[in-house]
Length: 164
Image (cartoon, rainbow, N blue to C red; front, side):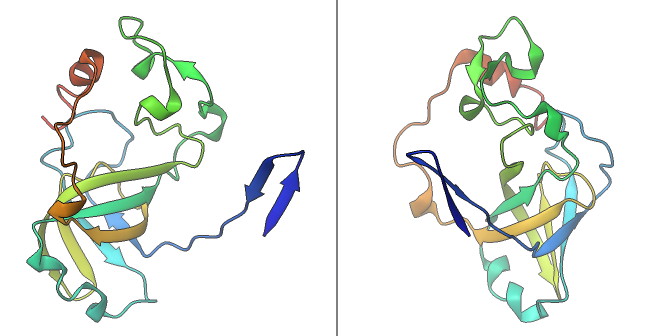
């Protein structure tokens, strides 16, 4: 459904059905120490176990998920200090990877451990237990950046313990 608002604003309403749900030991929303987290993504009954065939031949997968526990009243549409740390500069929402995003979408590249039936086992998924998974894609090195990846110092400081 597309609605026209004003002269140039177009709003598109999209209905997305989860392809699966995360199962892991992380029950609370926290910012750091995701690197050792082992998660299982259980596909919904809409999929047979054939849906994962061939995925385990890849080393990594991209997981797109929905921050369903994020507080909609905290959605940032402007600037703020990342993690509310005044030592870091104010930046816009699209210059950070915070959960308080306009559409609550998360995206992480994870290490594939294995798949069995309709369950994909991964390492390093920064999503809590029962998080809806919207899509799973294999990582192809040709889709990774072909140039050196750069980022500001504050981002490196923020990420220091993220995967630790």
